Image 1 (tube, rainbow, N blue to C red):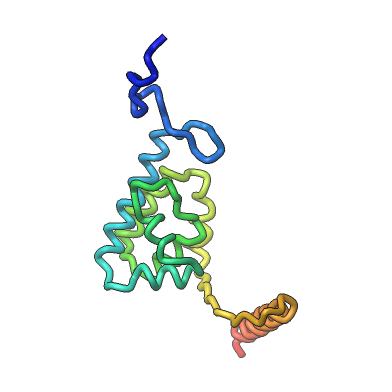
Image 2: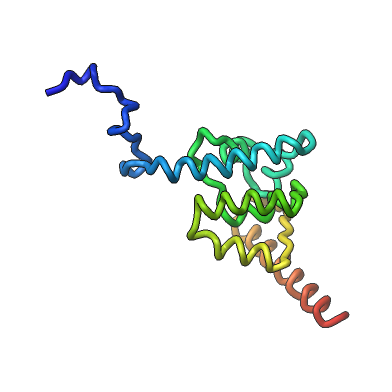
Length: 160
């Protein structure tokens, strides 16, 4: 039996476990790191404050943006956020293509979600609501805003 102290925890036979205890796949980790590196490089070329604008648009903290752009971390970029990041950062068609090619390799099952957002032409507008400390009141306000937006969209589609 081998001496436990002599076993290298970073050896090829030992892979770190993810949160549910199963072994991580190095190839998957590498493909995620690849698109995160591309995203980081593109964002680094944008004006200061870009990460903060991304965080606000996604309804999250700046630390989350740091996690999804750090190739050393396994936190993936959720597909629904890709279109928002493209819009905020004003990625060129070439930058979008480069990023999406790498993203699709890392997350092949997300291709449909990306396609639908890319070609839908929809624009997502986020509205920050105050905290009324009354969940029912908060929900009524959100529903009223959604109903108003739906009526305005219907009017615009009808040419009015």
